[in-house]
Length: 184
Ligand code: IMP
Image (tube, rainbow, N blue to C red; front, side):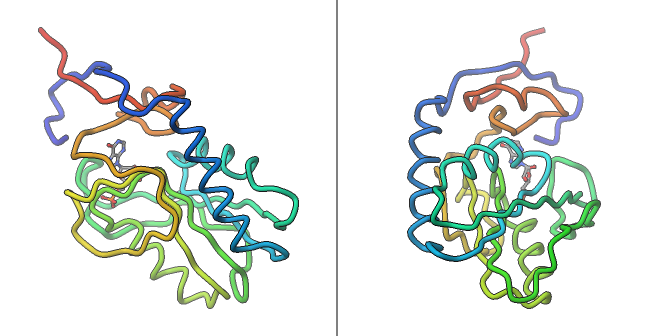
């Protein structure tokens, strides 16, 4: 979406709140099975993953010692095309050495952001490092960055809602929507 002059409006619902809820419950169950009796730090990438992380965390039961942390990153270059070089605007508070870390992201588009983040976190010597993404766009993938927990794969369409935005808008919507161009 590089045409900065164009205006967009909501198109149609791509993934409903009920489908999201069901999938989040499944992902939480997978995480619970794997980390039973252990501590794990869910590390959300702001701002897009905030809603997903808070729903996911609440579906993980008491058998896991869940911790929450956040990072904020910005991509160099313009916001529509990921350059793959990520600047950390806000780092995690957690001392990562020896910890189980799950990076929680809203969407993997080219994969460059997550590949870079994993590389940075890997150097901090975690006990384990995994990625949980709500959405993946396989057609856009430029690098292979592992995803251990995946919500949905979607086609190459720009989506908003459930934390995802376009120019800061529509993050608060409970469903995930595609956009369409505004008729002028
Ligand atoms: P990547 O480095 O190309 O994987 O970029 C991932 C980031 O691009 C995400 O964290 C989002 O902030 C943004 N992004 C990519 N596709 C979409 C989309 O369809 N809607 C909203 N944001 C998107």
